[in-house]
Image (cartoon, rainbow over all chains, first blue to last red; front, side):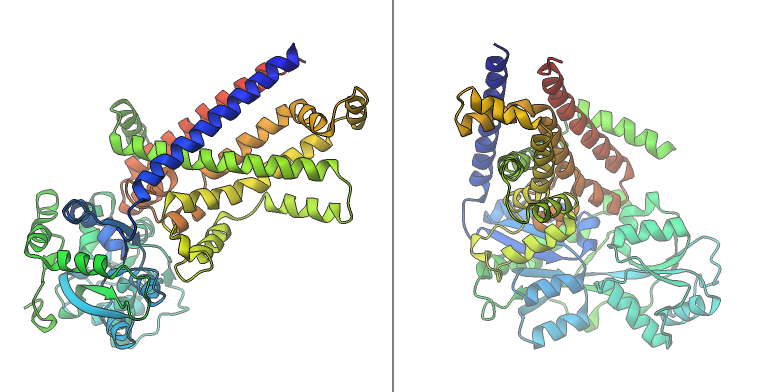
Length: 291
Length: 232
């Protein structure tokens, strides 16, 4: 009797598990069915952490029927994915690396989407006394000279590239210095670490504004022309990778520079943060930005 | 301290209000990890039983390998699965990278050695004379295995719990092969990391609490079955 009861329970459990598995696969199948409806968009952590994509993507998906798979990594990794043909379209902010990406034939149709700016953040105490310094490179130099803790993304992201560029302009090699630490994390996480350790860091304004309430960091340097943070959309070159969803990539790129989207970008964040997080730039020239 | 209190309050708000996004994420976590555990159960218990009941050259090496597999680092599994199913990888034609399927595969790979190792030990731990006794009562080999598995159900259910607990709380592989895509492959762990990154600590804590509650509920259910069916 005992054995009989046991096996009944086990059989019932197995049936339940089977039903569970089948039900599951059906649900997934319904979603994954239309082929080439999927667009893999590799982008930066800042577009995701700021919440902009959560607003834009549903509109795009509703309008076109595509399904966008957002993989939010640093700009460096996003372009690596593009180089391997593992992404269809990129939304990135690392202009120098992007130019090389295009020159090497991995991407086509690089279009200007929007910009905001980088800011140098630090603790209220400001041990390196950089508050109000006009030149960003000068401020970086002062941080180095004071030996104050600086947190770097260290992940080849757009922000990280910008930071390296500033060190170069300042004529300083921070690698291996005791006051220079690399988090290897996204912008949001790096801001958390910086706030906790009360160090300095370079961040994009969008992510900072979105997270301001939980951070104890102040904007110390801003407004330098060298601190512009420019976002481009790039379609991955189908000639190099035939599996790329070329129609989907084009549709997404066109959507990003469309009038309607640019209008949304313009007002995004205004009601919540009191100022826009990004400035729409479609159709403009990079040289004219920030003027 | 405020933050933790806020997180707890937020967690109850999200649960009581049946927040559709959080419910969706929780349900997806359950589906993916449940399916993965189920797959690992089939592979793990069958191979574990076969290894336990047969004698062959190099058996100890195989057992060592299985036991090492119990500690397989999820990120390594994630990296390996990612490279396999890249568009340019050997299984690229399946086009399953950044889908829940990929997450199920990765999680099943993580859970299988855990289930295998525990079921192997469980079957080996049965009194050796039991096999002879069952066979002498006229049972076929298959019937014998079935009776042995039932005899070992207590540790076998522990294997299910260990496997499920391992994968539902796993993050490294899930975020790599799933991509944390909203409403599609975002599960409790990946959502927690993302919300932490965004600085929404209260939501992150809330998701963490929900994850714990889900794990507790599943384990309580399995423990209930396990203990009730144990006559001793």
